[in-house]
Amino acid sequence: MPTFGGVNGPGTGSFRFRCAAMATKADYYELLGVPRDASAEDVKKAYRRLALQYHPDRNREPGAEERFKEISEAYAVLSDAEKRKTYDQFGHAGFDERYTQEDIFRGADFGDMGFDMGSIFRTIFGAGFGGGPQGGRNLETSLEITLEDVANGGEKEVRVTRLERCESCGGSGAKPGTRPTRCPTCRGHGQVARQMRTPFGLVQTAGPCPQCGGRGEVVATPDPACKGEGRIQRTRTLNIRIPEGVPDGGTLRLRGEGEAGPDGFPDGDLYVHVRVKPHAVFQRDGDDLHVPVPLTFSQAALGDEVDVPLLEGKQDRIIIPAGTQGGEVFRLRGKGLPSLNGSRRGDLLAHARVYTPVKLSAEERKLFEELARLEGREPRKGFFSDLKKKLG
Image 1 (cartoon, rainbow, N blue to C red):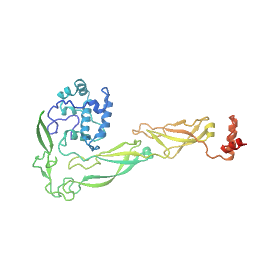
Image 2 (image 1 turned 60 degrees about the horizontal axis):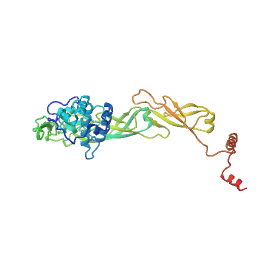
Image 3 (image 1 turned 180 degrees about the horizontal axis):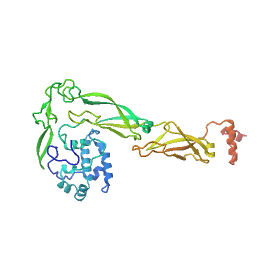
Image 4 (image 1 turned 120 degrees about the horizontal axis):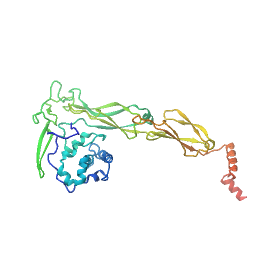
């Protein structure tokens, strides 16, 4: 597998010529949609957003792969202070005279992007980058959880259909009792060198061997269980841990739970996209929770002590001061959700909701009419009573 601190050495599939400046080459800042004075963090955020949108594993639309290559090259330049300075000073014309395609990506920081970084280099430099077959394919699935799951964490089950290593042959693809033999085409190296003459000079690349697919071995007697593939498709139920405070729309990465890699190569990862179901009572705002607190006219006017529901099923009592207005908010510190990193706990915000009674008893109506007189107005008897009075 490639090391991202540098792209050196023979057989990596890297280009051996300097790219000629093309008049039609898009501006790196325009590709990422950032101003020329954008900070390094803004450049990284812009690239991550676009890379997730155009990554070939996620986007199969025509032109997505080419777009992904362009924004990856733009990020490799603009995320490096020295390369960015050169690009700002000379533009593409001067920049491409100083840097090869290999130089552009050497040392670029593609860390913490939330997707398989090896696939970036395989996309740009070809399948032979880093030599031989790559690890197992990454998989994605979704999981719906409740707000209580966010608060408490715990384990959940997900079902995944994936290629797993064949138990019969141990992943070699060879029938039990036999072994793969060295590939005669690449002599066990897994790669074959290729040269192509272009207007810019000779291009030398190293790609996977067409006979063995980069494994360096061929199977003369295939295992009938997997038909020589070394992997079999199975459906599994996996238990995954839900961390406390996981955000809605967050993604959990399970290393090694994707598809099995070819014999001797690592397994892919499983990405679980989390969706939090809406709650009947509480609304989430980051680590904070919001809840309505119904109040009567008398409670709002005179004050009271009322119980506020908590997510864990308990209640907490708060004091409603006299003269409370509808919409006022009472904060219960530390009664919200735990943060994802465990550093703090959010608050519970109780919103006062003063409700007008729909049906009044005779005694309640009498009291409200008396209140109206104290306010200096005669209580209305209703539309038909007023009409009867006017008609005499």
